[in-house]
Image (tube, rainbow, N blue to C red):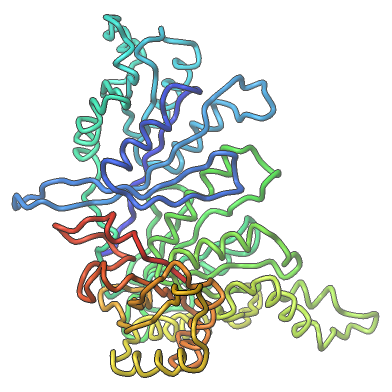
Length: 484
């Protein structure tokens, strides 16, 4: 069964070693890092792996989100967010909070305020006393005065204490893997505040007579409803609005994006709501980019279409018959990087096209499950190469040898074994993806093309898009691979 990945937030004042701890965990556990640029000057999120032993004694790997927050400085500085805002947002979004302090520095007033606010959240809190190598015989028992019971001593420069910290984490978070699966279709409703997400969520939940479950999420920002449609369970997730840059404090914006990433990871198909009265917003485009990079299905939903129609009415009450076509052309131009995403005009108030959402989701899910025989893929690949060979350099001409589809990946993903993959231009990758869609479909979902040096990975080797299998080097996979 697919479950929400736990979120761990690292907080503390500036220069206590939060980023070093963040990097140490990723390097040791070979996590897949995702950077989200633009929301803050150092907003970094990562999906980390946590090795553990299950109840049968077998070695397993679970996953969690790790968030490296900006260092807390003087709250009077306009460029920094206040301690209260950051910790409150961490409490809202995170399942566990790590408060980091310096072993070689006496407890500061900022340390006390961070610890107090973290404890007030009633979430599990760890105190990480970092830079142990610089303590020089300091009395570390003094840090007990902060009131945090779980205390771990680390030195990221010497790789000390990190394993113990992760072992402590494994005792309180569930063993959830990103590879866990079920037959339930997961839909996430995403977008900025006040674009009609909750109205659409309520309409979708109430339209169905057979409601299996209706429950709140693990945080206040996610509501979930599980309904049955055409004999299949569908989970709908309504996420908190992602606020625009410049409208709010930096810390709040950061955790909004973390929540969006977590929802995207849980979803099979994402419905991105775009306000019909305010369609040209960069943040909407940024969310669409995150969905594409995550390899999910995507539908662009133009909400509040009834209000847009009202705006176009003339003095006689007649609406502009060309308003829809004009807005559709505008949105298509703004989202040219996801030309495969269908466009749906809705109104949760009037119910326009709301009933089409489930049918559209089912159609996209069917496309995502489509598998193409290897023989057909390679016949198509030869046709495309003969029609338009890839360019290269003298004595360095890329040669596309054969192609296979990954069978254990929910995203339609294809591995193309080639030579001189580094010289394959991004425009050629786009040419292949466009031609692949024209021949085989895959409307409404992202498609991943991976170019792999034929001498480095056997066709039955590891998937570049999934976690490495045992006894295989991650480094060997990364060399000579590329994604369209």
